[in-house]
Structures are given as structure tokens and as C-alpha cells.
Amino acid sequence: MRSVLGAPLALLLVLALAGSAGAASNPPPSQWQDVQAGSRAWFAKDAINGVAGTHDWMRDYGTQTFRPTVPETREQLARALVRAFAPTVLPKAGISFKDLPAGDPFFAFANVAVAKGWMSEIAGNFEPTAPVNEFMVSKALVLALGLQADVVGANGIHMTDGTPLPHSPQFGVNLLGRVIGLWYNHDTRVKGDSEAYDLLPSTPAPRDDVAYALSRAARLGPDARWYADQYADFDIGSPSPAIQQVIEFGMKYVGYPYVYAGEWNTPTVSIPYCCGAQLQGGFDCSGFTWWLLRAGDSMWNNDSIRGYPGWILNERSSYAMAGVMKKWQRVPYKNLQPGDLMLYGSSPDPNSVYHVDTFIGNGWALDSGGDGVTIVNVSSGWYRDTFQYGRHLKPASS
Image (cartoon, rainbow, N blue to C red; front, side):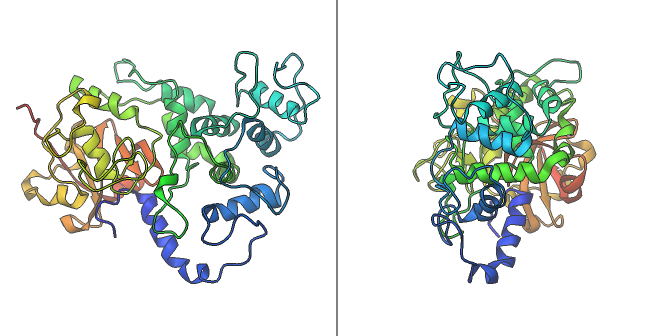
């Protein structure tokens, strides 16, 4: 197991990969000439079969060619959305586009997608051939699933006294898109795959990743509310001004991918960072903890990006963060304070600890797991069941 692995779903991925190793050695032939075993798109083969084979949602290039690495365009996304979620809805009178005439084969789909609020017109245009990015796809699918109230709730993140926390307008969509599992966690250990393919919210989304997201959304259907409704009233409690800064900084990276050994917001070279080069901006669990909390030094320093000094946190892996504590320093769940580390594992033995995140108050934590960077509810479920103890950090300036 990776020493800095940071996610419950990442653990499930490891188990799934191990369990399917025998089947993967003799994969069935693919109907898609450009989706073959060991290729860049093989991770999405089942999704592609569903959205372009069983269904015609993304059958843009026939039944043998999918073009998985080509960026999905706005007109293609509109057609896929309408075919998947509103196949009987007719175009709405009064919606037109300067760059997409009513006689165009994509017009009706663009019209319905805009009428539904899933996509937006841009200064009277639709920009049909422009590529979509992670945020655009997340927004379209989250809204197509009927999660508008949850997006509003997430964007209304506030303290118990009603004070709102400032954030970008994209925050709620980025959060829910990751929480409901729309984006695949690319894995260097899988032949043909690479963490370089992980997406940032602003990254143009290739068709294989869009197929994965569309398939996931279609399979979830109404069950997406099970994941999303917890954010309808997003009260994080009463953190101190110092921890408010941490939360507001962390919210900027919600929607970023999980990257093994990732501790920076951009791809890096080996020096001056801790754990070697990372192929994409993103974070593993302990790397995100560093990004939020660790006071910078000559080895690693993000103070100029972050704007606050941080706390003393020299250990890089979750088990090392647990191992430096004396037993009497372990903080039980009921005594957690905003800014404390939360350490998870199969037992209190530090060697069994495999995940860490940052408690921010009222049962919530800033987290980087298999679905990427999110804010998760740690008061129940997997997080509560596997939580072992917390750790209080000493400010670097004290």
C-alpha cells in the first residue's frame, strides 16, 4: 500500500484492480478501433460502450471510432445531455444563437440544454465547436441530475452565526461534481494510464473522461441526492479567524484531482519539492494537509500562494503524522478543534494509519481522496468508523 495514499475510494480502486488482474490479462476484443487494451482510453471502455454503443448519446463518429482523446465540444456535450436526460423535450421558442442557425443539426440540442439551464449562451452565441472543461461538464451533469438546490446550498457555505465564506462562483459545482464521483482518478500503475491525464476544473475534457462522467451520472440518477443533499445547508460551525483563512484557501482547490505524492497546485519538477515530480497539479491526502497547514521552509514553501504562516508539520505521510505523537496527545473525536488533523486507519497503531485530512468544524473536513479535493462530512459513515484520533498542531509563529 502506498505510504501517502489518501483516499477511501483510492483504496477501493486498488482492490478492484487487484481483483480484476486475471480478467485484464485476456480482455475481450473492443468494438472501438481506438479504445483497445493498454490504450489511454481503456479505463473508460465500459462507459464508452454504454454511452456510444448501447446508447447513442456520444455516438458522434459511428460505432467503431470514438476518438477518446479529442476534446469534447459544446455542441457534442449538448447533444449527449439531451439524448441522455431530456430525449423528448422540444426546442424552446425565443432561444437562438448568432453562431448556430436553427437549421443546424445541433441547434435543437443546444436550445434545450440552454433552456434547461445546463449550459449557457455566451454573448448571444453558443460557441458550438469550443471545447468543454471539467467545470462545464460537472455543471451540466449536476444540474441535469436535479441538484440545483444542493449547488445553491454548497455555495451558501457559512458559519453558524450566518457569516458566509467567500469563494468562487464555481465552488458548489466543483464540489458536487467531485463528491458524486464524476471524474476518474487516473493511475500511473495501470498500463496506458497516467496521472498526467487527471483533470483540473479548467482543463479541456477529452471524450473518454466525459464518457466516464456521463455514464456515472446516468447510473446514479436520483441516487445522486444521497451524496449531494448533505450540502443543502452547509454550516461549518464557528472556526477561528485563523482557521477561516485555511478554509477559504482550501476551497480554492476543491475540484482538483487526487494525485499520488501530490503536494502542489501545478505539475512540478523534483526540486525543490518533497516527494519528487508530479505530473499534474493536485494532492494526495497528506500533501493537501501540507498545502493547507504546513509552515514553509527551505525545502517546501507555499507561503506566497497561501498568505498565512502555517503550523509545525514536518511529517509527510499520514502514518508518520500519527507516529510522532505520544498516546496522551491523541485527540478523541469529541475534542477535535478546527485545524486539527484527523487520522484514519484500521487500528490506533500508527502503522495502520493510511489517511489524513483537516477538521474544519461541525463535522466537516477538507479532504483529498479518490474523488479529488472536497469537503467531506466526517461525523458518520466511513470517516467516522475508521477515525482513530486527531492531532493538534503548534503554530509556527509561537
